Length: 472
Ligand code: GDG
Image (cartoon, rainbow, N blue to C red; front, side):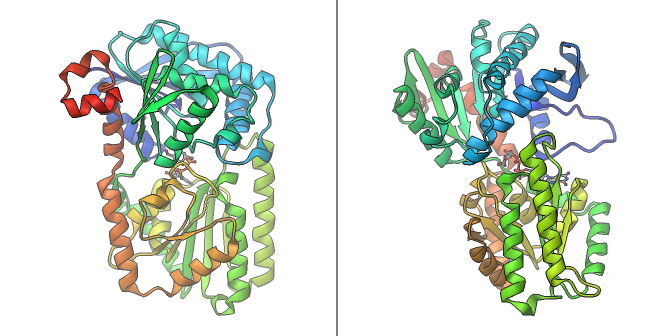
């Protein structure tokens, strides 16, 4: 079996006795452990000096991590990745803050990463690059004569060609995708947007799932990120989860809990969500003293202005709603600007009558899947979900809403709060079945399997049906 090399923006080296950052990190570790290999990326630190990657061995996996230099942090990570690519890929042109030096540092940092990775390679690995920070990495590796299969997975949505054109240097950016053998997207819609941009802007041609441009042939695929239901259900039996659940239930009294937990990010639609809660309390006075909305907004990218302004706006908005509707012993909004251990989140989700997940745009959104997995199947809560989350396609039992219209969210909240238990059970069972069918393990296994079969010399070993898919 070939070794696997995974490259992602952040790498978390497993520490004995410390919980992993999230389900996705666990999945990547499992993928690596089953193949052996390397996980390369930023260690989260910023250093004045230019430091090379440090290797930490855990079993058959090498964690090769390095700090970013201050300029790389400000211009590659915050600047181009999160003030240009993130907003454009999330339909938020107004939040784009482009500077030429951001783009230069973005490409230069990817070059540096490629120079650090190349000496670590044995030459027969499968290389899997993750996300928008690293789009040019495949090209930088190719120019260093790396000729093993390289795949790229985009965790966030792919924008329309029109929006992509707003990024100065968009053609160069788009060209970078063509040095991969396999490009993975969260949903068919994202795959179509990429195909559309590559054909319209670059003049590429497409046959089946294969895109052709010059001498390049790139396979496209859809791989929706899932969750591991069994692991999450085990977590819901965790003592901290049970303690959270007990405390929450005791403090709720007769109130129904509406819960949300997201990174504090403008793509998550938090302000419109608060608007919907305000409308619920205004138009349905019967819910006053009867519901409580708890929103965990975990701090994120605090050094970017846009995020700091959002934090202040949400604090003001939550305070305003509480000022309008609170009563002695009851405040409708519990807005918490901090990060909790996963077990606590699971307790919050399980205690909730409604899970409120309304991003204006989201590649997939794992929170809504975690909410479904955390429920008691006999008495589950209802998911109110944005139609613009990638997960909306799989979660057929959710009440879908347009997050730009607080009124539709309010209506869905009302429907959810009134929903009979039998309907809640049916909706939940259907969603749980879909989640079990498309687990996180299947996600990485499908991608790695497809990447393995993009090998030209392996084509002859494939059954004809499969060969024709790969050949287009
Ligand atoms: C990107 C794409 C795609 C949240 N608050 C806390 C906490 N979380 C965890 C959640 C969940 C994760 O963070 C957030 O994942 P999402 O998928 O919802 O969103 P992004 O961070 O934007 O992720 C997204 C994802 O990549 C995977 O491909 O789905 O579309 O944008 O797991 O539970 N975790 C802890 N404390 C918190 O307070 N421990």
